[in-house]
Every structure is written in C-alpha cells, then in structure tokens.
Image (cartoon, rainbow, N blue to C red; front, side, top):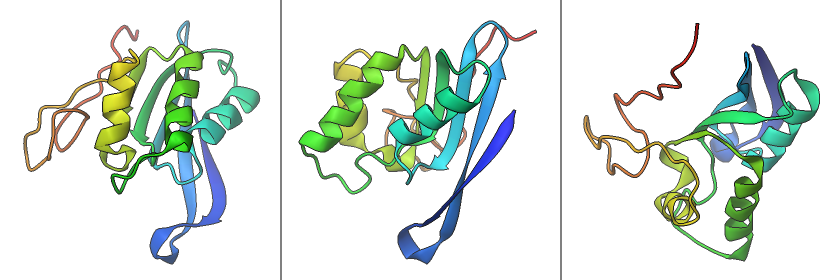
Length: 139
C-alpha cells in the first residue's frame, strides 16, 4: 500500500489531495481516492507508472469528480470512454463522480458496483452511505 500526496488547490481553497494505491496480489493495482480533483485518468496513470501491480488496474474506488455538478460535455464523455481501456474489474464510484457519469459508465459496460440508496444516499447508481465495496477473494 502507498499513499500519494498531490499538491493542488481544490474547491473551497482546500490544499492538496491524497490517493491510496494497493497492489492486490495476483489481481493488480487498486486505487482509492476521496474526491479525485486531480482527474481519474491522471491518478490511474500515476499509479500505473509508479507502483508494483500497475500493469493491471483491478479496482477503483472513490469520488471520480467527472460530473459532480450534473453538467455533461464531450470531454467528460471522453474520460469515461478512456476508462473502458483500463480493464477495471470493480468500479466503486461515489458522490462527486456524478449521476450522468455513472449512467454513461453503465451504458458502456463498465463494472460499476451499485449502491443501496439507504442512510440518506440519493441514488442506488453508485456506492453511498453504509455501502461496502467488497473485492472478495483475498487470502
């Protein structure tokens, strides 16, 4: 496991962002981010190029900050189409990924882990309050 700090200023003038990377034996790289302001593709490429297991992206979890405010354009669609090239096995999105982005992921066949829409979560399209991303098969 590694934690990487990315110096940047995000919304609300929050300084910096972290991402966690895990090499899951015999599976590949798993990335976890809170609110991926740095861009999901950049964060994945960073992990892929720097960490053992990065030749295969096994799972991604977090806010992917693709369409957090509901807007949609060709650039956002291009990000999701590029995600299709990573052969991700489990895609656990949450809040700031955006409903339009998650709907497009599902439409393109990405392996989005659905949520339960309980405990105040607005939708079951993505993981929310009290939901668990179970990657299973660990020993």
